Amino acid sequence: MAADVVTVEEAGRALGVSRATVWRLIQRGELPTVRRAGRRLVPASALKKGIRRSRGPSVPEFSKDHPIFRLVGAGRGGGAIPGARDKHGVLDE
Image (cartoon, rainbow, N blue to C red; front, side):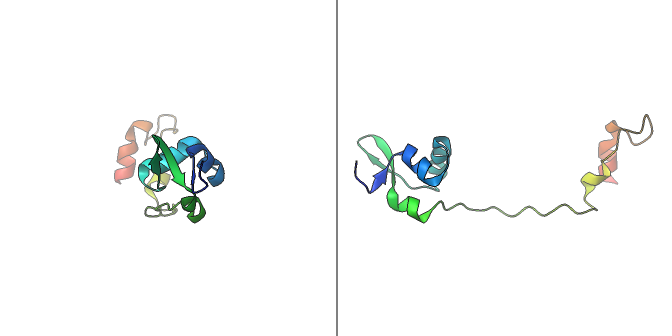
């Protein structure tokens, strides 16, 4: 096989990921491929460039005033209000 392309398995070894991950990268368009003789091959130049992953918007860190923290302990009051069924009431406050 020509040195300018590698198989999906070889690409996974070179990138340090599984074969399934390589296929996901191909399906998302993050890893270019070529078809030769009915086989899907990855250009060696694409492996040298690395994976171009698009990072989505970053998730902000939780702060002490985040609504989820009002649920901590809700429903464990031994019958006292707020109970587990009142979680929406706790969050809507």
